[in-house]
Image (cartoon, rainbow, N blue to C red; front, side, top):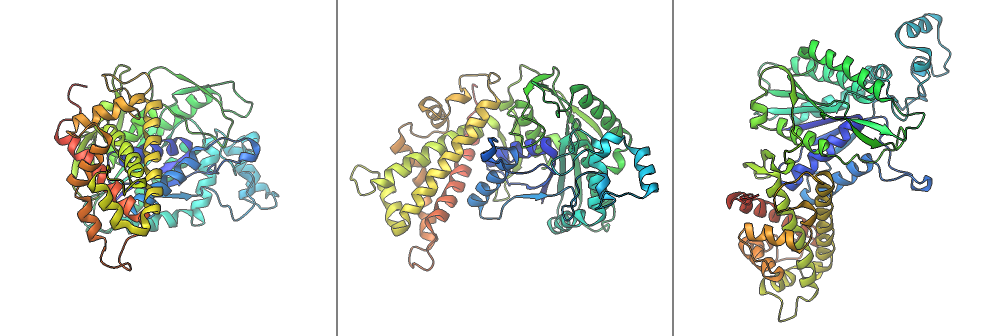
Length: 489
C-alpha cells in the first residue's frame, strides 16, 4: 500500500507538516510528500527573515530520513517553468514580453490588466486565475510527468493505494493549482488498466479561517479570500467527478486573527486547525474508520467543537512492520515524552559507561558499540531534541484546548514523563527506566544481530541509534495502547 500526499501552496505545506509529525509520533508508515509551490524558499537570515514552513518541511524530511533510512519522504515540485525568465503570466506567452495582438486580446478577456502584471516567481499573490494559468503552462511542458512517473512507481504493487491532495481555498496557489493537479491525477487514474491496483483519491481543503492583522499592502484581503473560496467550493461541488473520489472541507466556526508576515517567506502558522487537517489527511491515507465514512463520492465537511480535545483523536495506520494499529494522539505524545527522556538519560549514562553504578544493560550497549559510542551518543542527543521539538509543537498547537491532568506543556518535564511511564507500566526513575526498556525491548539482542562479531559488519553508531530509536517508539506506543495509557484522561 502506498500513501502519497500532494501538498499545494502554503496551506498544503502546513497540512503536510502536521501529517508527517503525527505519523512520526505514532510510529506509523510515513507518506511520500510532494510539495507544489512557487514560494518554497528557505529563509534569508541576512535579510532578517525567520524560519519558513518550507524550510521546516525540508528539515523534517531529513530527520525522518535519518531515522528510517528509506530516503527523504519530501520532494519539492515547481508549479512554474523556471527554465525561462517568467516574471508574469504575460511572459509565459513571450520571453521578451512582446505579445501578439491576438494573445493580448485573449488575456484581456480572461484576466484584468493588473492580474497580467502579478509576479509569479514568488507565489501567486491571492490570484487563483494566475496560479491556474501558470501551472497549466508548466504541465503542458512536462512538469506533471515527473509526478506521474512517481505515481506509477508507487502504485505498482497489489493492494489499495491512497493519494491525497491538500491545500486551501483562499490564496492563489491552493485554489489555482489544486484543481488543475487534481484533474491530471484523476485523468491518470481513469487511464489505468482495469487490472491495475485500486487508487483512492481524496482532497483535504481548508476554508478561510483567519483574518490578517497589521496588513501590508501586498497582503490579500479577507473579503478576497472569501470570494476565492466561494468560487472554488462551488467548483468542487459541481465538478467532483473529474477531481477526486471525495473532498473534505475544514474550517473554523469563528474567524481567528493571524499576524501577517508578508506575501512570501512565511513562517509556519501554528494553530490547532492544522493539527486537525493533518490528522484528517493521515486518516484518508489509510483504511481507517474516517475513510469508511466517506466511501460515497461527495463533498464532506468536518465539524470540530470548541470544547473537543484534539489529543483525544484516534489515528489509524500501518507500522513499519505492516501491522495495523489505532493510536490516540494522547498515547502517542506520552510515548514521545518517554522517548525524549530515554535518549537524554542513555546518552548521559553512556558518558559514564564504566561506572559501577551504571546499569549493566547500559555498559553492555557501550561495550558492543566500542569506537562507535561517540557517534551513537551524538545521534541519540539529536533524536531526543527532535522529540522535544515535536512535543513543543503539540504544546503550542493545543495551548488552552487539552483536557485532563496530562497537560501538553508539562510532557517534557518530570511530571509528564513520569505519568506516561507509570501508565506504560515502566519505572519512574530514569536509570531504571532505561535499563528496563533496553531489556524488555531486547535491544541488546538486536545489537548482536547488527554484526558484533566483525568490524566490517558492524553498523555505524548513528545507524544503531536511529534503529534503536525506531524500535523504542514502536515498543512504547504498543505498550501504552495495550495497557490503556489514556484511561482516566
